[in-house]
Length: 124
Image 1 (cartoon, rainbow, N blue to C red):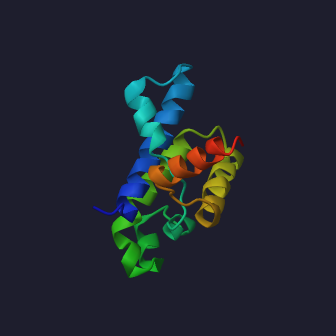
Image 2: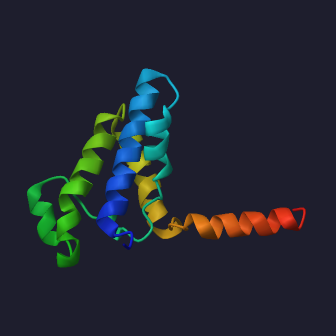
């Protein structure tokens, strides 16, 4: 089954939520949390996070193909807002996430393993 946009968005939201919780609790991730964090892949291909998602009316400005992602993007904004000490920190977090739309893309583990193996085999 292909890794779809909603799944990617949900995985990223859960990883962000988990990271904020770990920071609040001042501890390292347990194995289950490590698994959640490992699914974070950035927001490459999820341009919908660039859209406003502050109130239900914002959805009307979205592309119809992204409507199903609106509640998740609202949740993402809420998590980040709740874990920001002020508006400036919230904006910094959102700017960072938004920049990843253009720079972050999922690379399957077999591709990474093959590259790492090739580098190792060539003593790099």
